[in-house]
Length: 201
Image (cartoon, rainbow, N blue to C red; front, side, top):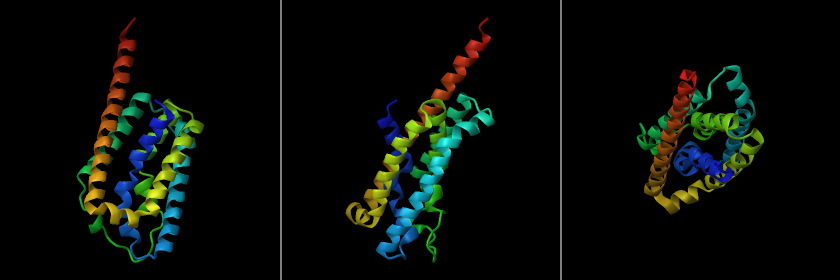
């Protein structure tokens, strides 16, 4: 896997196009300038959480003695659940509760951006595929692209329309399903290889 592939994986999981309507709903009472400030603040908070997962994740998995098989299967299941909620949401974004006060940390930074699926993915790759310093570049790039798209969320909604945003969200959900299945299969393959190795004299 290349660093560019890792960037694409992070971008798909963050899913900025799919989160546009949610961000607009949460900040619709704010003026354009204030909305952009809130988006920058929430993305900064989310990125701080991502950094914590990047540098503390490997140590946490070591302390908990989580095997690579469990890490791959567990993160795959989390990713699958996130994809399922994307494809079959319980409610539409425009039906979300509108708060009178501006959002802080919840629900924009967490769980829309720094979602369990994203944090599990960061911890997985920093523990078993890349070093934290290698992951940092693709993570910064994915966060930057997502921030730019969300800053122009109102304009993008006018261009794409609700149907266009919904189509983009469903497409990202399908890609997430593929990533989840691949990750679970990697865990099963590792389990099978370890089982065979343990049974051989």
